[in-house]
Every structure is written in structure tokens, then in C-alpha cells.
Image (cartoon, rainbow, N blue to C red; front, side):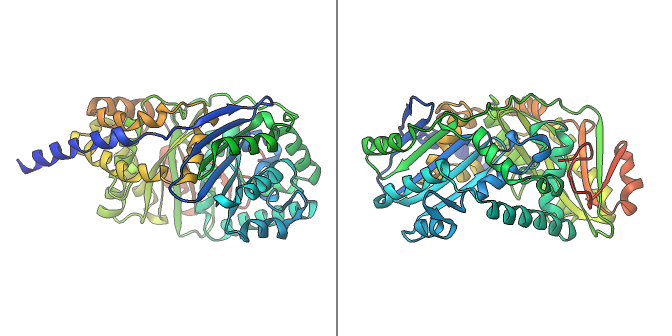
Length: 465
């Protein structure tokens, strides 16, 4: 009786939360050059958050020059307008502001947070970074060498941070999603200063730009200031690349990256998933929370708590404009490699067979309740969400209807989503970094093994990236 009463009480909680989880009002303005402004006043604290997003990102990297967008994002912070690298950094730091530039697969983003009294300086610095970056040849050379050194150091010590690069290259051969955002030793070595300048000319312009601002400002004044700063920016010199849909893997494929003497095996198991606009996002969030998205997940319970095979395991859904990846990620002792992979595959099979019951859904829903709303509380987080929705062509119902969608999910709708998104254990790619001499014969049970050395200067076994 107590258990049933608890579930009833917990089921009642989301109704109020679902109604409250909505975006604040914001104004959308499209300038004549194609730049989109998204503006939302929020006067609770004297702060302004800004996201200036340029469509493109690393998917625009030439095939042999992966890492170019990431290098550009880094070098953009090393001086702009009339300020050199030190003066540019000091201009923000002297007033307690923050400004950074980051590259992702489908965008390059300038993030800024300043006191509202320093809004003019914030706009000036963001405009300089975007429209007038110095793009110094010396800074490029330093960042290129530093990145190559970091990749080599990771291969020598802890390669876990490189797993996404090997895995995406194997899951998405010949596809832009398969190119490592930060590049490889081979691709970085071939990038010259002229390549950087050409990439900037081809991929930066007013027609690619989204500027989202939230915080303590006057809307009319902010609109006028941003229009003055960006309305005259010409279009990018090139076209956005067309990105196709990667075909899901049928059967099993195995990539073994040989790291002789490794005492641990790092492994990913996965396939192609769904795009960012996937209709049953709420059901997918619930399923992934229970499967491998929190410490008390199915995967953690089996692989860590019960068996002690690993310290950490999780499942991840990467959603982009086109279908991204669905993966299980973990590591284990070399001698436990097959046992850990078999157990992960068994848990995946159980997810397909049993799905989630009412109690699991309630638990996952409450977990999401605690995680999601705080991500929309600050001016910066709101600006980021406005830009995200615009970048992917989503309207505000993507957020406003999310709580109600979580509340209405049932074991049946969640199970249908599991069947739709998660691969069957017999249709997965397996990517392993470990001592091939110790595990090669054992992992051959999963299928034909394609092998490469961790010392190779690229991440793809198929081509140089």
C-alpha cells in the first residue's frame, strides 16, 4: 500500500512543474543581411548573457583538414580589432566579464557574460572577435603545435578523451560527423595560415549569424546596438555544406586500437541514432536516464555496483541536425574486457525486452525534474537555449511542451522509443582501445576485427583525418 501511495504522490508532482517549465518571452528580429537577433529581458540580477552562433563549425572542415574550425575558434581569442591577445583578454577580465570562443560540429560560438553596465564593451568585443579577428600566423602555429602535443600525450597516458574521435570516425566513415573536431596529428600538421584565413572568409558572415541575448538590458537599446554592430556584415564567401544521413550499421563491426602494454581497455558500443528534432524526446530522455544516464542506472548497477568491472559506464545520445550516435561508454581491466562487454550487451538486450515500468518512469522523471529546470535559470543559459533552438530550427514548444511530454509518457510509449532508437546487440559497432596482444583473439567473437595502432597519426582506419 505504501509503495502504491508513493507512486501516486510522485505522479502528482510533475503537473505543477510541467506547467511552469516554459521559456520566457523573447523577440526575434532578422536583419536585412540574414543575421538573427533573439532578445529577452531578465531584470532579476544586473547581468547580461550572450551567445553569438555562426552556423557551420567543424562539419565545414575540408576532409584532410579536420581541426581547422577548432583552431580558428581558439585563434579568434588571441587578438581582435585594435587589441592584441593580451589586451583583448584584459579588456574582458578588467570588468569581471567572460568571453570565450568554441567550435562544435555544427557551429562556432562566442559566449559572453558581462555586468549590464558593461553591455557596450561586451558588444564591442564580440563584434571584434567575429568581424575583425587578428588571426595571427604565430598564434596559429602555437595552437597547432599545442594541440598535436596534447593528442600525443593522451595517446601515451590516458586515451579516454580520444575515444569519441576513434568512435565517430568508425561510426561515420566519410561523413562530416566522423571528423574529429579538434583534428588529428596528420590533419593538423597540414594546416597553414592561408587555410585559416580562407576558412574564415568562406564560413563567417552576417547570413550565418545568430545572436541571442538575455538579461538586464533595455530591449530597444540592445536591438539598436546589435543592429549597428552587425547589420553591415557581408555574407560568408562559401556555402554551408550539405550533410547526408549516415546509414545505421547492420551486423557487427569491430575496431581495435592497439595500445601495447595497456592495463585497461576503453570501449564504446553503439550505432546511428536520431536527430535533434526527434519527436519522442521525452520518452528517449526517460529511457536513457534509466539505462545509463545516472549513477543508479541499469548499466552502472550491473557493471560497477554488482560486478565491480568498472568505475564508470554511461549511455549517451548525440543528437544533431542529422542522426548522431547512440553509445555505451566504459572501461575495464584488460583481463575483464570480454566479460564487461558481454555484460553491457546483456543489459542492452534487457532494455529491449523489458523496457521501463511505471516506477522506473516516475524515478527518471523526477531525476530529470531536478536536472533540467536549473539549466534555464541564468541569463547565459537562456541565451544559449534561444540560440540552440534557432540553430536547429526548433520553436519554443521544444521546451514549453517538454514537461507535459514527460508527464504523459507510459511504459508502452517508452518501449516503442527504445525499439526505435537503441540498436539491438547484434547490430552495433564496437570500438576498443587496449592491448591488442592480450585481447585480439577474445574480441574476435564479436565479428571481424579491423585493427590500427594508437601511434598512427589519424583516428580513422579508413582514411587520413
